[in-house]
Image (cartoon, rainbow, N blue to C red; front, top):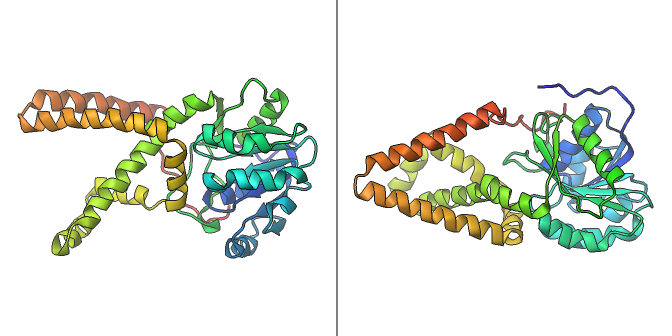
Length: 310
């Protein structure tokens, strides 16, 4: 894996990060560590998060109002929960300077385009994006400057998107160590429904089932958690607001994949009931190959621990 370098001219002058949680603080850390921008400004509606970001020295200036943060920005990165994109885009649009680029880290690209796109002035380029990175932790302390190293960062421009702006956004995230690829927004949302959204839904469900147990049984499930259940609890520890917005904004793709999963689960249920070990072994053999493919693609490494500020 190629290590990102901090050498070379900055890709942008001023970057404004809107939302200074896990991904937002990671963006701020990464662009600074790798010299991708000259200056970082941060905005967050939470005064507590903003104060903590200032204590961590994540930016050069701090604002509660996104409209003030974007006034001199050459690129704006939206890192808030999806449900806030429309209101924030509308509020900041009149204050964006001509020639600026707006991008984001949202997990559902169709919803981002629908919510933020209509508010973008003609003089501003909008390049939707999504890093396939993050942890279950939240807040300014959760970020890591190396969160994106070796991870895919998907851009979803359409036929009207300025290609020079797409190239500059790609350069920015490549400088931070990401592997940048492009795809259609609707295709992205279907892929992520399988690889991210459905697994989170399953994790929330399984952990919820354990929570609904009573007394000693619930305590023992927690005390004797095996690796699989521990992984589910880690995933289920993610931001409730963020995942509420993801499921509501990608409902069609999630429901489609959930239906397919339900059918596959019924198939397994019948195989177990009737003692059809050959069917179980066949499935487990095929899914084992998927794991091997993930390892070969070098996407099996754990995400870096947050809060190191490096």
